[in-house]
Length: 316
Image (cartoon, rainbow, N blue to C red; front, side, top):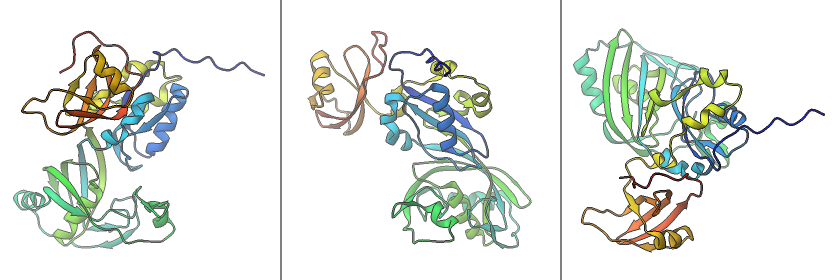
């Protein structure tokens, strides 16, 4: 019997967020499984599914940071989407079966920009059948692959910005900055319907999720070339990066002990302090977890126990 492979060295209780640039043709689950093998067993999950054909930023949460998945999923996102006009597919991208082809009307940049502006703000979307949403215990895409369909109520989502990057015969490229739950495939299909010709995603890249962008992400090619994950521990972003933009609350020693035992604490409130989710730090500067602020009271929502010690200067 061969000896078990030695566990690779890492920081005790290391946790954090590893942004990965997902390659085309691989599922988000396959990326998670591959990195889990490299890191040899820590808890690991991802913060928002990408379609198999899509590329771009897929934040992986490692160790205690997996407790922060809902907050990563809630971060705003940015996409670069190439949209093919004149075609309708069952998946709303070119990987699906073609349902219809239609002539493309003459378009110029000002006209298309004006149309795209109609989709900025709070809009309603009907989630696509080919999505990871659940219905009676099954994923919608599982039902769709079996030839089925179910009613999907429209959901309100927020599109912060759509910038037209290019326009050529039969195709345009747009950059979309949007909130959680927005389907760019559905956005493209809805634009196509508004034009009367239909549309489907030809290429889709997620360029940013909150503070995680392509420049800081580990490429899929790099991950595939690694024999072990020892080099990845230094690429982890701190767990509190998952709460980018949330207000911070700093506790003293006594408050920290109360908070980490799951009890609410009272903290002074400044005029600009708003109720809602906050990042909570102990007296030593460690990220303690997530709190819910109501006036002067901060209630524990998620507690983390793996954030390594920081310098004595508290984060801002």
